[in-house]
Length: 344
Image 1 (spheres, rainbow, N blue to C red):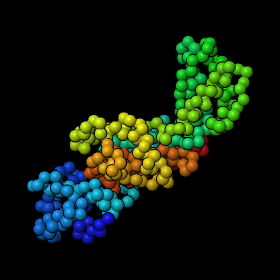
Image 2 (cartoon, helix red, strand yellow):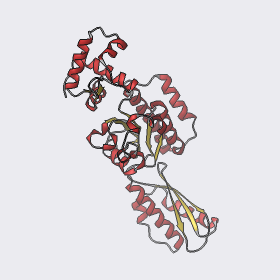
Image 3 (cartoon, helix red, strand yellow):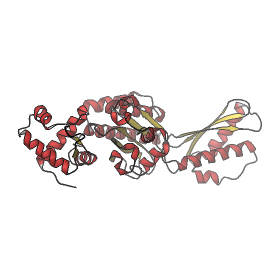
Image 4 (cartoon, rainbow, N blue to C red):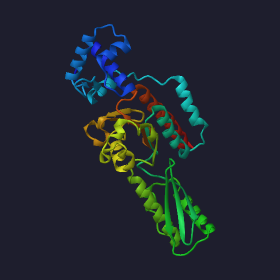
């Protein structure tokens, strides 16, 4: 990558900040007036021309100013974004939300999505923590109607799988609760392979329930990520990066088609250490849906036990330092909460 002079770094940084603020091309005159630069307008123009030739800026129209390119944003994020902690007041506000919430992943996950969206003014992405090695924790069988039963399977770490089971005969809730109690005694804290190795029992209903448990745990073991939570869609719908797209290549497909999100997470943060933040700019020549957009992702949870992904999706022109700090801090909180939940 080209090495920029200190002055070129300053001008690139100012163009990024100004374009982030206005969403408009930035002229040399604007930089002189807004930032009281102690260099001539001609010098600024020459440096902007050089940055354009190097591929860090582009000129949308002949008479217009310049806007950062994908390479410009990448250089800015890699070399000039200050990875500083969020202000203490912001951290305190965010942590207050979590510790005032009810206890449990079912409350923390949507809260994390809401906090990320509100603090970044972008779309949040939060996946429930998931483990490749699924372990049985608890089972409930609930009579619904006729011979149909709702099976609610809870895995270690808080993942919940649900399935409707159709029985040959109608069973009372008391009978179903007794069967669930038997399964819980035999299967608590056991792996999928251990449950598969259990011998058949004389009770057909118990066998049917164990088969359903195995099926649901098998499905869970094949998942890349857990359930998706998202918020902040209204934050970006009016942005040109989201409104001027062919629907076939809209960045919002990432939220609508789970396979796209799973592919993105699997090829980025899934194999990284927990807490490491990745910034994907313009789709990185891989995801066409993310042209003109950026995704900031990290992995949270407990290493080698249970983890999920969280981050934001927004325009390429975003306040990266603040947004990266927010993503990192929310991930730290969620990792601590997941760890506490495992202990419980």
